[in-house]
Length: 180
Image (tube, rainbow, N blue to C red):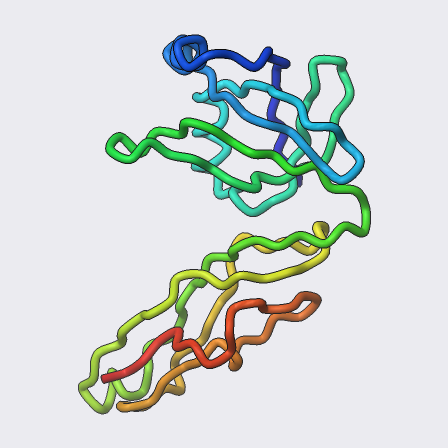
């Protein structure tokens, strides 16, 4: 099931115009793609928050254009305010069928390591996401990493992760989890 977000066209503006836009409940954004010229747009902030809460961060979505057409895209970048963590700007990248996408997929650690259950160790998670390249249609919300076989003193590395249909770009010798 694909999520749909409505976007509105906007003119590039000054800092004060962008601030007024944000105060009115809109998020300034840019829409671009290989075959799509760059466009300045806005998204309703409440609608976008609901989109994020529903777990859609790494999914393809349908963007409803002001012309009535829709395009397939994904959220390439979210810029947040440093203190309030409110979304200040978005980048949407339009994808065509067969396009490859590079993005960070969050890791979900599953299982209780043997070294924790039996050996009395502690599980330390060193990495929360991996940079991957995959066909746009095969984007995943998260990637499960089973650490239940780890014994005390062992390390689970990036090169041990299975990612069918895509390529992991994060260096393979980086640790994901350790049991100490």
